[in-house]
Length: 83
Image: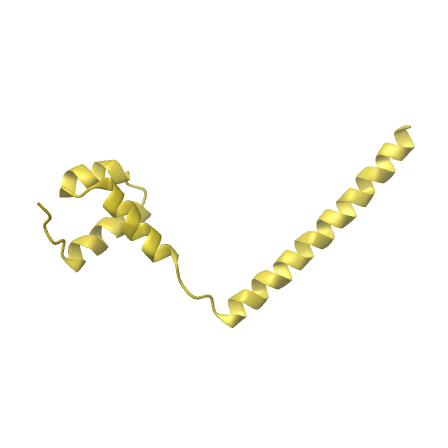
């Protein structure tokens, strides 16, 4: 039989998971299935990203690609010098 979990208890469980407590321990403590807690966590992970954050991540991604390119070229040069 299913019992409804109040929003407050749900938030409390999710907060404890975020602080590092194990899902299985919390499931036993609160009498909730660990699958239910993972389902709640999955729902929290989905969300919209602001345009500013998106632009920041795009810029960072481009910078990292440039760094990888530079390092790849340097590695190729060092390999050619050894040969």
